[in-house]
Amino acid sequence: MQQFCAFWQQPHRPLFLLAALSAFVVPLVWLVPHWAGQDAVAWHAHELAFGMGGGAVGGYLLTSLPSWTREGPVAPHVTMAVCALWVLSRVSFAFAELLSYALLVVGTQAYLAVLAGLLIWKIVALRIWSRAWLVLAVAVLIASDLLFLSQAHRHAVSSHGLAVIVLSFALLLSIAGGRAVPAFTRSWLERQRVPISMRDSCVPAVLGAVSLASGSLLIAVGCEFVAGGFFIVSGALHLLRTIVWKTREVRRYPALLALHLAWIWLPVGLLLVGFAAIRPEWIALSDAIHALAMGAMGTMILAIMARAIMVRRGDMLLLGKPLALAFALVWLSALVRVSASFAWSPLPDPIRASAALWMAGWLIFLFVYVPTLWRPIQRPVLSARLHKT
Image 1: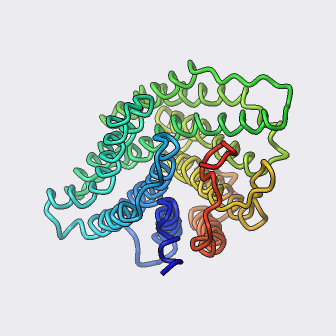
Image 2: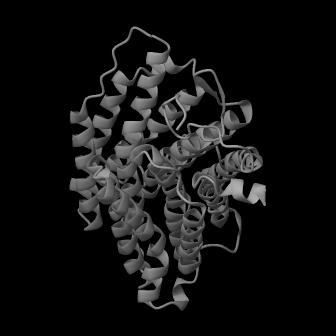
Image 3: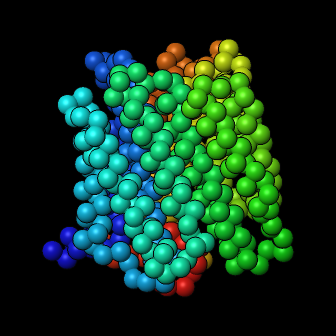
């Protein structure tokens, strides 16, 4: 009973587990022979985004909520209810053909809607308006999923619909990750008393997010060429931001370096999506989108989730060889997947090879993660602060 209670003490424990399991299972569509066709592609894209991504977002938001509200952790029964809704969303989409559109929407959106409701409740009650953007971010995820579901229910999911759900998560990553990575970096540099000034200007951050949002709206309505220009601008702006993030200075801190290496996939992915929209003969849009889905989303999610279980020694989190290997395999899987569009790909079937690398990375993560689920929680969790919360 004590171990059961410990499992539900922090939302990130069950939700990160569900996200990791989803990440491991989703690539099976490319490795199991009888799984083929548009339905498999649609399921793969949807569950990669809302299974893995949705679970990770929920775990991060609900675990970080107490540090924003200065209140205690989310109650275990709330965590249980949210996890049940996550499962309901997965089951609802898996059996979409058997459900009416109304039931499909209710079943798949209940999880994200409750997350948004919890955020609204806390933000309004405590007047923490600086966190209101989180509600908007979750609303964008819901809107992109509704667009996807409207196409899936008509059995006509377009490449644009597939792209929009990944781009919506990329927008969330550009905002949340764009705040977290420099915050963790600045905190560590200050503790090391490194005499380096680090100023992350909000101008390229805001313009990059606006360009990304504009490109996503344009690609949703089929204006690929114009959307491509916005994605290239967004990728360039996000790449420009990293110049002042002192990546070279954090190479002695592997846990932090992993966040920097994960972030680089966001601008690279946006640039590739931009070029794919403008010159599809150079790179397929599906391959470019995988740079965001597997590269930016996959590696950043793994790097963040790994921080929740790393052992702390002094003012540093220890990455450990198994977690480092898991991260390296997932990072490499994205690179191999993107190579599918190019003649220089060294593998005869880069799609299956990337799926195998991805699954191996997440399997290693699960082997490390599962034994920690019943241990006492090391605080702070998912925070750059060192004092206990």
